Image (cartoon, rainbow, N blue to C red; front, side, top):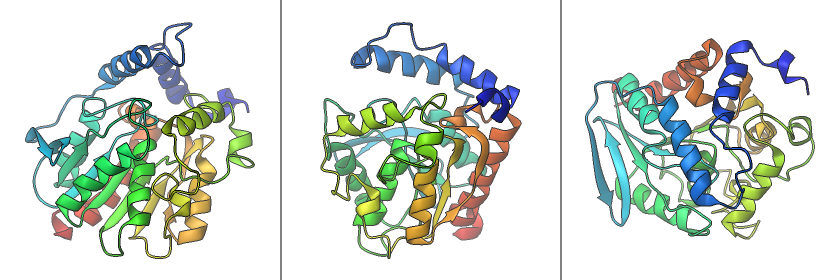
Length: 285
């Protein structure tokens, strides 16, 4: 795939800037080093918080960060189930709360490989049960966790879900898995590595959303990125469940951090905000 032709200069510049935070020769199994590099990258792209009330607290045993007030969006961050936390997605959650006019609760779920499956799912489920009906929203691994909750909780537990470039558990072959096997910022080999690190059975719906109850999902919006091996996971999930797909033409995995650097990414984020505003904004209350 010729990504110089597929991707515009703003997205290519974002990719180069992001890749610059991974030191040459960093051992893929050095999770202390990997997390430090990821955290430096997230801090670099942090766009600042808009004026919104923020407080850290616990829900049961799980640390969370609450933004704003009103109807609640439960946000689960990306990072391959091994990276990220409350700080890595702080500005994204604050912007959602401010622009939508809702509360956002971001979950600091336990990470692998130290805490294998179902630790992350259990933490997310504990918070979801305590909050009651919410709109689920997440990116990448966080979107996977959202979809796992939606597919394993009783019907009516959630108001809706908004899934941003999710991994949904379909066989990693054919379509985008082959076309974009070497996509920038996320390759097929990295997808397989992160999935293996979770240490779960492939038919466990808490791990693999495709194995969940797709007949009784809440209203669902999918935002895949075009240049991403995971793109077709969203299409397969939509075909099986009737979910809505909003295509991310010319975007790569992780584009949320480019929303203030790329017109294309900014427009995609605007679409997510519009959907969340209909679901959790003041008009939806």
